[in-house]
Image (cartoon, rainbow, N blue to C red; front, side):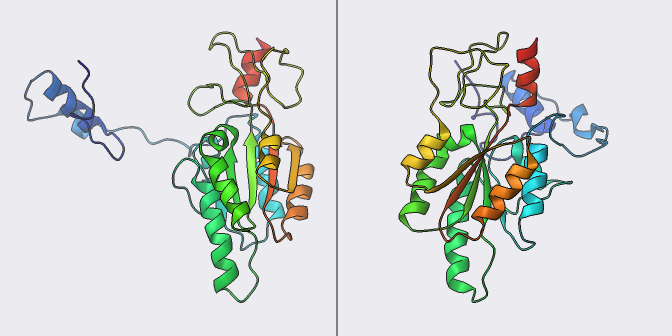
Length: 253
């Protein structure tokens, strides 16, 4: 027998007090005074941030430099949502997995209709795993409804935030022996029989005409691509490709 949602809240974050109450209910014990309720946790010295060597450092900095001051930035579920915090602070909205493209599409259509003065093209970020999971329908919707956001797909070769699980764009064999097959350039990764699904081919198949693949560790490439696509009155996709720093470290071992 499995217990879970019957003892814990179905929404919101879990706090120590809630977990303690769930354990007490599960063991059928009563304790009116919860010692953990007054737990004083030490203050963190800094806000959460990208790992050292993470490709997102250079991507976020380059995009922020290239985009106009009034640009609306959209985030999604993944490591890159940390870009909403200092020093980057370039995520104006963050909802649920795959929502970045859909909201950017809505913003582009709304700004086009309701604001007489031309406004910058909305820019949204979505990871490779999130795109495969929930971003493709939204991308098709932007094409079908003739919208024009700039979509930046962050391809780090894995599902990094939740433990380096595989996605259709790559193949991870095990936690202890990382072997990755993906479409990005690297000499760290051996060839595998499995052929990953190339993000750029999926994007083109959805009908996107403006597609560019850049190296996440080359900020000049990223800036140039952003500046090239921003004036366009149709959807554009930039795929920033650079291996997750933690995965690269594991592959070197």
